[in-house]
Image 1 (tube, one colour):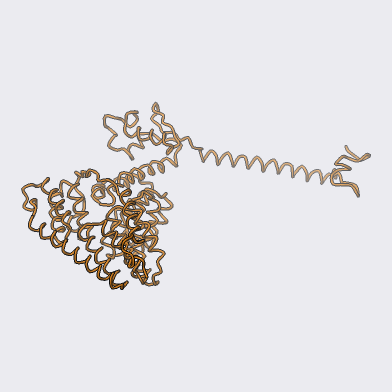
Image 2: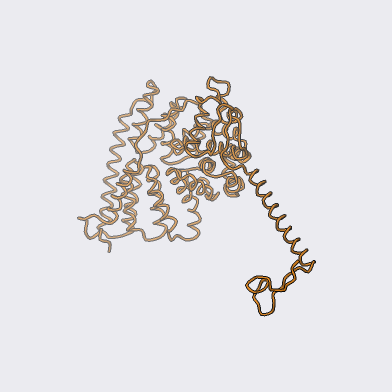
Length: 480
């Protein structure tokens, strides 16, 4: 019998786990930051874009777009208000109304519907009391399945009303009452969804690890594999482990489809996986693991511009690759998961492009590099060969950080590599091999001539090797 049922005065193991989870989340969750303003128009259509998502992420994405894009702010916030009114999270509705009042104060939706707020709060309070009363009754009856369902219903209620801390506690308390692998899997996925919305990526990774080790049936495990891989990849990306995240995105089975639209869509997998791979893999790995991948090709077909950018990078066409990424920067800055990582990912991709561009050359002119990596600087006030040029300052920073093993010759306008000239090294090694071959051939020919002339000195019987005793010529030996 579980001690939770016999002694309600002390905390249960599930309560202690929930308290620990809440403490960790308080540390892991980043502070709210000022919204990023995206002045450029995005390429996506708002209605088509948001129709791909379900659940609470619909509101999150609409609210982010509404607060970051002046061009779409009114439409996105009005849609966010409509989305909030279909649920019972009053705080979300109030936050969207305040945001709309800032950008469109005369809009009818910018005024708070006090009657709806009061009615919804009353309904939420009533439902909370009812579910807690039912749960206490289940505990008194000592039926584990009823208790598990009571915690699940209470967790779902808290999650829908926006009380994510209470939802985490309720779901974690289900653990002691799960009797089948399917119950455990369902509980862990709910905890992953809550942790994802809270931004507690360490908790997401922990629960993903438990999902991988759950004793589910092979058929059920295969169905959940795509969702588990997607949650793991998203967590790794938010922890800035871009190479591991890329490998996780690339390993997601193509059957993900619409099964996880409350968190991530196949289009997101293509974009997140492609950008993480570009930022962390070399050209050979990109060709093999991304472009030639049979599984990831299904996702890339949904976002062909990502496939083109990767193909351009693999073919040393860095200007075209960077142009594609810059064209889609506004879209990615309006993505709820990419916004805080896009500047870092783009910086890594640009740095890798400069590194790859320098590999075949021992020296290259700054003008030719600027035409590829800083075309807007050419012809401007700051010339690419001037030390005050942003592009030259970028190169200086890469050299100081040890990323580029090179030096800048401002007088001649050159970037000179300090690495060993591979062509000269191959030539030197070849000439050394020829010299050694000629020397060995000379001694072999000389030895053959000595043998042919009968000048070989043979050791006497009973003596050691070499000419005579101790390697000396014996007396009376004929030496000319």
